[in-house]
Amino acid sequence: MAAIELRDASRAFGPVVALDRVSLTIAPGEFFALLGPSGSGKTTCLRLIAGFDQPDSGQVLLDGVDVTDVPPFERNVNTVFQDYALFPHMNVADNVAYGLRVRRVAAAERRRRAIEMLELVQLESFAERKPTQLSGGQRQRVALARALINQPKVLLLDEPLGALDLKLRKGLQLELKRIQREVGITFVYVTHDQEEALTMSDRIAVMDLGRIEQIDAPDQIYERPTTTFVAGFIGVSNLMPGRVTSSSDDRAQVALDTGVEVSAERNGLATGERCHAVVRPEKLRIGRAGEPMPEGWRAVKGTVQSSVFLGTSTQIVVELPGDVRMTVLVPNADERERARLPGGGAPVSLGWAPEHVHLVRDSANGGPPPAPESASDTEQSIAQGGSG
Image 1 (tube, rainbow, N blue to C red):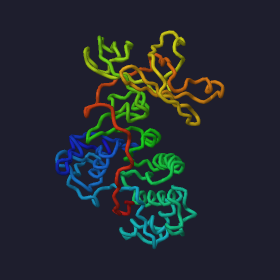
Image 2: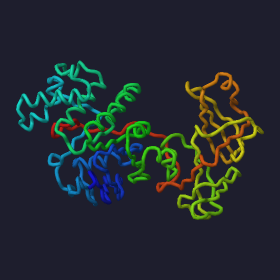
Image 3: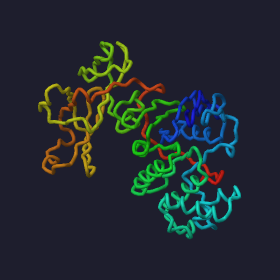
Image 4: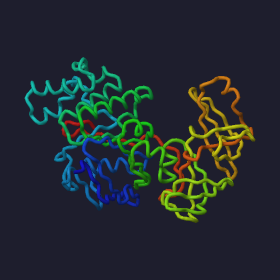
């Protein structure tokens, strides 16, 4: 039985359609990410599951029970938002135990369980401190402990790491995954950050303009996107437009607008259909014009537009015929090799192995995505002893 299920859920705010007939199923104990830019509908999905909002049509089910009209305090769900919403006058242990206090659990039991939760988030030595004496990452872990102390079936997390600096955010990504594995609770994690979703999730739903573009495991989302939006939103958008010239049961021949023909898995494309060929930047090889590629590789000619040193790699943007731009990532493993990389204006060839090209169709909402935006707005709520 699914821990969470949305069935054809729709929600509009005036003329703005936030969700458009969204259906998804989340398994018990799964770490599930809702990923997309601002306005994609991911936070609205979270609010429907939490009960903070209701769909205009469709259903919300928890453990197979229809809870569409059930208020938040009657759902075995807790929420953690970006704003920690800790009580400044209480110490850490009392903040964590607040939900048990509301339920009139005895003081000794509240204390015991609060310390257990603080041990889980590795903050047991901070039990007597006030929130103002903690760092941002520590406060977020206290908020997580408070949300977990009532042992909810589902924990909803709305961009909880968005306000933290990069290094701390990366560390807490691993901590969150460790905690989720230890407690075995279903986590639903809303984020606009692709790396967060890829790092922590068992599965990801990529959303855009109120619709789900693709649901899959992180490696499949990255390696085998199904639409131009997913291909561009996850990682770097290396999209070469073309048309299917012929197809068989599982393969398609595509004439790219750059003048090169490629063969790849058909992925449901029909002869005559427009599509895009995707090659990830780390799988492209760049060479000087006329430099041969390995046998069996396909190659296109272009001109270097820019070259940027990124530390572990060098990012080179190459302009192809038809105003197509491709990004190449070259590891900086050898200083002499890096010095030989072509600079701006140099004519080059881009090559790739046949198995590294993947075909996608245009997104339902049309075309490649815009650049990811900043984190969406969060809400503040303290419900059933949870955070947010």
